[in-house]
Length: 302
Ligand SMILES: [Zn+2]
Ligand SMILES: [Zn+2]
Image 1 (cartoon, rainbow, N blue to C red):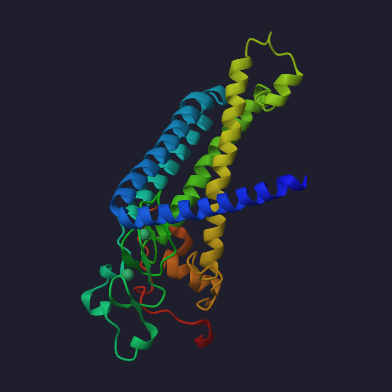
Image 2: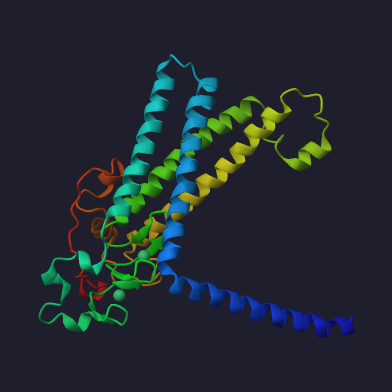
């Protein structure tokens, strides 16, 4: 046993060194080829998401729903309406979040500089070489300073910040709603055909299903249900995380910082605007934000 210890330790050190080198290499590559990375990453993420939305929409509304409800009945039509409403809001929030300019440069020229007595609250960005407002941080991928930066979202193709966090929340909310709606259909279909377990490889080994003429169909239906369940959990988890962050007026950039928490009502208003939760009904509802992203009230000053 002892004679293996030294080669094992050498291998561990070597693999750790290789991991660090790989990480450094990836970071260096991003720094040197920022434009190429962004140009590749954003369209690929968008294509992946569009394919998933398109597949779920066609499969669940065209294929699964007629097997569960009467195609001429009111329930069928209502489910179709809900599906169209959800997809419209996913795409509208996505588009508005992508096209929103949330950089410091989006401010009127007068507000891009601190007012008298404000300079001590602003900080210097060494990359942009200028003073930027509190809670603004530089994004390497956007190559700009972002107002109240939360994080860079590759699916949104933009940084999530002061001007577009409302759309990001709406995007996640409707993704959760859409995958939840599909999950109900897929669960009902799997239940109807007893396909929950059949797609499990262990179950297939233990039981002889060779004579079942619907075996392939059951495996497909059961597997899509399981995939759908995972796809429901991802936006749900992200939506819950974002709601917690917004309710405390903190950001993913500084996750533990609660110094701007001025009560959940005002915190939500600072992100969703004056119409607050009504914005979840439609991405097109106008809801002006109470501040321009340069002035923040600290908790101790409330
Ligand atoms: Zn900067
Ligand atoms: Zn960014």
